Length: 185
Ligand SMILES: NC(=O)c1ccc[n+]([C@@H]2O[C@H](COP(=O)([O-])OP(=O)(O)OC[C@H]3O[C@@H](n4cnc5c(N)ncnc54)[C@H](OP(=O)(O)O)[C@@H]3O)[C@@H](O)[C@H]2O)c1
Image 1 (cartoon, rainbow, N blue to C red):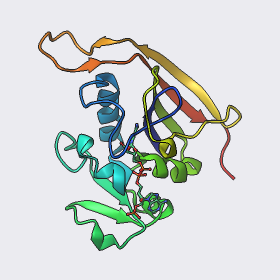
Image 2 (spheres, protein in one colour):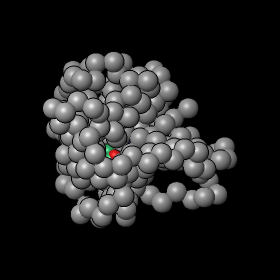
Image 3 (cartoon, protein in one colour):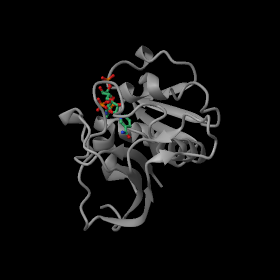
């Protein structure tokens, strides 16, 4: 079973430059879900650009329970000199290397190449129009292929009851799960 986790705004934008569209404390609920899914999966697959994003450095804590990080590049494998990170030259190679059911974590190019192999998508649909790069939109999901099985509204506000906490949900969002309807050919 191959899973994918993604957050996109109203027109399906996912990033701008190397960055996400929100700061590290602005989408606290989404970040908590992302950590939970990553730890549960054990293996994550990321594009070179997403992995080297400073905002979420999966090679550092607080991601100690991820057993295997696989990064995708078309370049020489030796060019990714990060300890304990496996390197693959294609999505097919990454899937073959995975020690656990993998979770694909982006970015845009990797979402597009991995989508045909994915069985379940954990999406945070941010209910806001945020400026984003045109080339890193998350693809539209066809209703004939994907079934929406969960849809939970997360309102704006503090993520927990700790008054000093910086964790906040700056934008309203929906946490949605899509399951592939048909088996792939
Ligand atoms: N909102 C979200 O949920 C979310 C999640 C993750 C990332 N992001 C955002 O996404 C943006 C980055 O996305 P991106 O599309 O620019 O980059 P990306 O998908 O993270 O990485 C692209 C790089 O990965 C390698 N790659 C991609 N597909 C490959 C394949 N099929 N086979 C082999 N290598 C492959 C290539 O590396 P080489 O160039 O080394 O060949 C390519 O240049 C950032 O803005 C980031 O913040 C958003």
